[in-house]
Image (cartoon, rainbow, N blue to C red; front, side):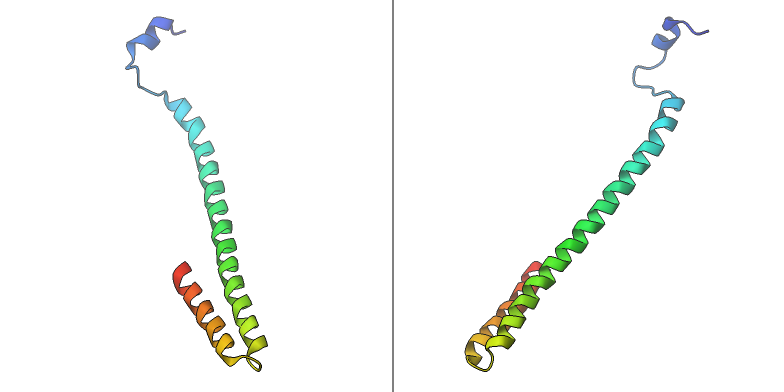
Length: 86
């Protein structure tokens, strides 16, 4: 059985191997969750970007017959939006 003095003889910043081996799997799980969350956020961001551009293009198509200039402006806005958010 080790005494309390034995623990003091080690360097103060030394981490026992058992503690490291216990923490390592927990860190890996945390990293996996973080990567999954980032992936879902990236996918949602992509869908939002496409949604805004699609909306602008749909509005351009809807008004193309009545107001071709407005339709061209909406198409240009969609292209500009996609160029900015990339």
